Each structure stands twice: as structure tokens, then as C-alpha cells.
Length: 183
Image (tube, rainbow, N blue to C red; front, side):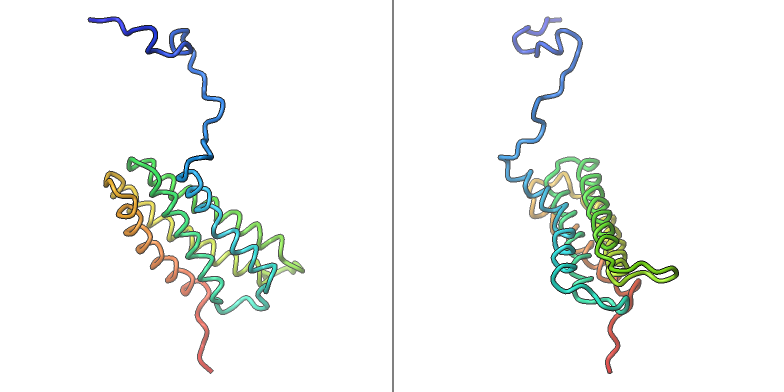
């Protein structure tokens, strides 16, 4: 049995205490930006929507509702594709979707002009529908991301999770909020 060279073992480990690095995130790396953009894509679109042209009614689902759900799911899938290993890819995907969903709902509450008992404001209704659909899509994407995480190509890891998540998100919006009826 050989004793490891003391120069190869960090001082903190030799002293029996593991000290975290001072800057755990390296913001010069492109994958850090992909993960951050993935978590924020849906909330940024929601904020722009509620500022520029907030919804005036709670039903049916608007194109922007579908867009927010799709951006949440796509962003979560992109975040998961930056990770290697099934557990990391799955939890990163689901975590990004849950974070985006929470922020989207908070934006819906903040943008609500008037709060009434028994009825949700249009911004909250659309934010809730998009958030639930986006999280459902992110959940499916997380399962697929965990399965394909061992593949080498990030694009190959992203596409199956993205496609399946988007299908679920679109179907969930339509199921939760209905679609526009032809006149």
C-alpha cells in the first residue's frame, strides 16, 4: 500500500476539513449561462407579456399561455442537458421547471390588478395554467433526461426530453384552460 503524495491532496482534506471553493459557479462557462437562461426563459416571457399586453379574460388559453409553458419546458430540458449523470440531469430539469413555475405564478399574482373572492384575475389564471403545464412538461422531460444523460452529445440528450416535454405542456394547457372555440 502506498501513501498518497501530500502535494496531490488539498490542504483542507489533509487537515480533515473540506472547505467549499470561494466561487462555486464559474460564470465564464457557456453551460452556466445555458442553465441560467433555461430557468429564466419562461419567467422573462411572462414578465414581458404581462407588461406589454396582459390577458383580459381567464379563458380560453392564449397563444402566450402556450408560449410560456413551452419556454418553461424547453428551458428546463436545456438546463438538464447541461448535466452529466442521470440523477443530476433529472433533478436539474425538474428543479429548473419548478423554479420557473414558481416565478411565473408570483408574476401572475403581482400583475393582478384587482383581487376578488371566488374568481382569479386573468393574469393569475394564465400564469397558473402555464406554470402547471410547464412543470408537467418538465417532469416528463426530467424522466427522459435521466435516461439519456449518459449519451455524449448534448443535442442528443436535449431533443428527446424537449420534444416529449413540449407535447405534454401543450396538451396540459389545452386540458387546463381549453382552446379557443371557432365562431
